[in-house]
Image (cartoon, rainbow, N blue to C red; front, side):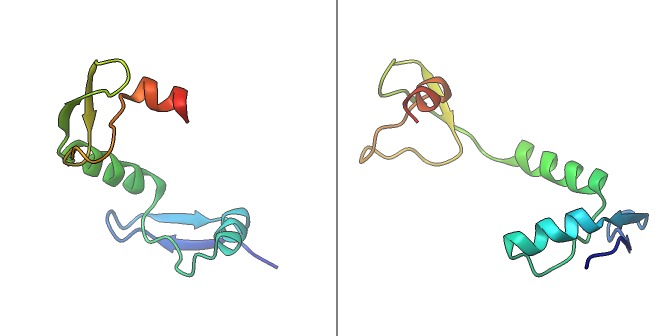
Length: 89
């Protein structure tokens, strides 16, 4: 049903293969658009976005340690450090 396609990255202009397996995955998830960037450019873009995100310092509601969160903390809900958040998940 799906066949490998060669696409061109909109950032670097390199050709990359959109494999049949990737196409099947996209279809299962309901994604309608093909990727426009190669894997290297997607990774670089994600890293740049992650580095530019403003982090806010607050105190964990469970252990009292410093916690950094990517949103402005409000007092209406408890905020947990990453360790407590993972433990209570």
